[in-house]
Structure formats: C-alpha cells, structure tokens
Image (cartoon, rainbow, N blue to C red):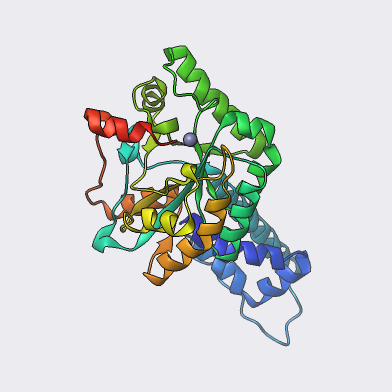
Length: 322
Ligand SMILES: [Zn+2]
C-alpha cells in the first residue's frame, strides 16, 4: 500500500474520529471495520445480523471494540512508518539515478530541493507545495538541520520525503572515515529531529569521486542525481528558471532546485508557475521514494546512469552545480 493511499484514506478519517464515540458510530455500521480490514489485507470480520428485537450483546460489542482499536493502532503505526521511512527497492540500492521512467512514459515528475532547511525559503516553498497539493523531496544538510530543526520537522509533518545531502556540504576530498562522518552524522540528526530514516542520498555539487558517494553506495543508498536543473543558485529571472526546467523535463524526471544555501526568492517566485505548467501538461508530482517504488512495481528497465563524470566534459558540467 502506498504512503499516499494510506494518507488519503486514514489521515482524514483519524482526524475526524477524534472521539472514540465517533469511531463506534462508524463501527456500528460496519463500514469502517470493512475498510480497515481491506487496508490490512484481511477479510472483514463477519458482521452480526442486526435484529431490532434483540438486546445488545455486551461481549460481542466489547470484542468488536477491541478488534477495532487494534486495527486502528496497526494502521496508525503503518501510516507512521510509511511517512517516516524512505526505503528504496532492492534494485536501486547503490545505483546512480538521474531519472526513473515508468511504464507507458507515465507523466510523473519529482521536485527536489537541496541544501536546507533554511529560514524563510523552506517555509515559503512549503506554502507553495501545500497550496498546490504537491509532495516533494528535500535533500537536507546536517548542519542546517542542527541550526533549524523545527523547519525540518515542518517539512516532515507536511508529508514530504527526505534525503541525505551530507553534514557540511563540502566539495573537498574525504577520507573513508570523513565520508562516513558526513553521512552518518546527518542520518543521526535527521532521525533524532524527526524520526525519519532515509536511503536517498545526493552528493553536494554532484561530485561523484570525493569519497561520499563511495560510502553512500557501501551503505546501499540510492544516489539520486537529476535530469532537469533549474540553475536556481544563479538566481535567474523566472522565465529563465522555467525554461531551464521545462525544456529538460520528461516523464520520470527529477528536477533540481534549492531551498537552502542562500537567497532562493527566485525559486519561491517561479515554483507556482512551474507546478501550474507541469500540471497543465498532465504531470503529477511524486516524491523520489514514491517514484522508485512505482518503478519497482512495473519491473521494467530503469534509466540508471553511470556516474556523470565518466568523461571529463560531464564532470566539468556537474561540478558547477550545487
Ligand atoms: Zn547541495
């Protein structure tokens, strides 16, 4: 069951069922019990035949209540784990990905934001995403999480996916121990701050050979690059921003933007228009974690790429990015 399906069905339900009496009211009709059973993959418990002359069977009601409480608790746990754990399918472990094409070139796209969390920018981007009902993926820097933990908590609370983007966002070469520290320290603070565990990693600047990618691969992370670059670190005018992204976005694309690392007001300004344009083209938005799971289900060929610095030209191109 996908994270989205669970959330669509159960968050409104759990929010509405703020009192147990309401749950019982649903339970009496058997509707919610059936729904819970369906979601749990179990056949629904047989519903007692209602007889208007019969007195309520206290034991049966108690059993039903307990079963119902158990089902809700299990679903709550499942929802929580889905929201907080960004695992990747086995086929993507240690793989470098620029895009993930789906069957029939289904028009899905993943928005990604790097280098945060960051004051103002992250909040403003969250506002735009919420207004448009879009979920994105945030590749966060450990130092920024340490500085602005509440912002990361807000990102997670709003249902976005999280990736690891190292502790210091340095382009320097790391010893194996240094690379381990960059990634594990970030993983630890993300977990301590939000309860999130992630197997998504993006190397700062797209650098593939300074040690951090080697360590991330050892630890089975998916190395998530991008297929469309907003070049937003240059703070381009909105039309330039949109052209950079839209001219290189295709089905299964991964779009690189930034919420951290400096003034991202142009990104905030361009984002509503970017979302509107992609929606108009028929795209729907998924997180990178969702994209990989969708791809796994299809069991088709994935565009897993070689490291982009396989030749000198692409290394030079990638090196300019942050
Ligand atoms: Zn970065």
